[in-house]
Each structure stands twice: as C-alpha cells, then as structure tokens.
Length: 224
Image (cartoon, rainbow, N blue to C red):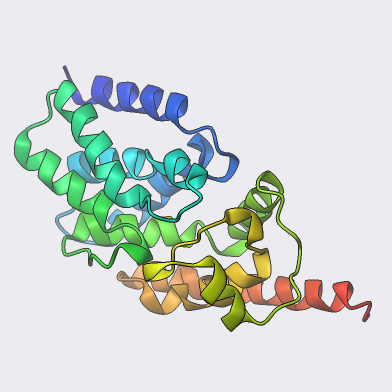
C-alpha cells in the first residue's frame, strides 16, 4: 500500500470517527496545513511521521467529550486507537512508535513532553488552531454544542476546584465557558510553543483574541 493510499484511508477513518463539531475533519485539516507550514521552517522533518500524526491526533476526541468523569484523555486513548489503524495499514513499527509519541504529547494536559521535531510541530499546530479567529469560532462551536453559558457567576478558583481533575481536565464540559477557556488556556499558549515560527504566529493570534474577549465583556456588561 503506497503512502498516498494510506493517507486517504486514514482520512476516511477519521472523518467517520470524529462527529463533534469543533474537532471534526475541518480542524484536522487546519492542523495538517499548519504542520506543513511549520515544517518548512525546521530541519530534518519526517513527513511520513508528521502527516499521519496530524491526521490521527484527535481520533479519540469523541470518547473524551462524552466522558463525564474527566478520566479519559484523548491523547492517551488516541495512541491505542491509532496503533491499531497504523498496523492494519502496514506501517513499520518504528514509524508507529514515533507517530504514537506525537499523538501522546500533542496536548498540554498529558504531562508528556514532545521530544522530536515532528511531535513539537504537531503540538504547536494544534495549539495555534485554538487561538486567533479560528480559535474564537471553535470555542463558540463547542460552547453551543455542549450548552455552555456565555459567562458564569462564580470565581475561577471555585470553578476549577469543582469541575476539573488532575492535570486540569474538565469533568463536565457543559459547565465550562468561553471566558474560562480563555483565562486558563488561551492566554498561556504562545509562551508554551516550541518552534520559532509558531511563537510568531501565536503572538499575533492571541492579540486578536484578547481584543475580542475584552470587547465581548464590555458588551455583556452593557458598556459601550
């Protein structure tokens, strides 16, 4: 099976698997495109590892979103699901190992650090897609999907104690809000990126997002 056929088959599997709005195939392709962009600014990037990693990185997102306990980590579960897919597509064991590392380390909350250039690029690309204009759109897609309120009348500390578990994973997504996501996650992203190009893009995107949320807060309060 040639590499193009493998990629097409992975896309078919991912499209069938990902039904939640903000982590659907559109998100996967945006991350994929960002991976290709960032890879042009780095040396010795193995695209045969990076591309399937990008396509499969959120393969277990639905399971995590439907879990009310906060115990399922889609990065960890995604490694197991991806391994089965990659074996059936006859990927080499060393490639599978490297792809699993990329998937395992692509999110903040796993506690696992990316230590290959492919894993760092995937991490950066996935984080860039949650800030800026795309990030705002995705946040409110999720907010609508899970019936979140626009704001919540409790302190951030109280919310975090009541609705998050170890490593900051959310128990009940319906109790989350776009403003909380901005405060606890989005603000921190540019400083946590690994590649120079991603940090440059991240600062621009976050500035746009900051302006939006500041304006939204004023409008909610009836201030013009």
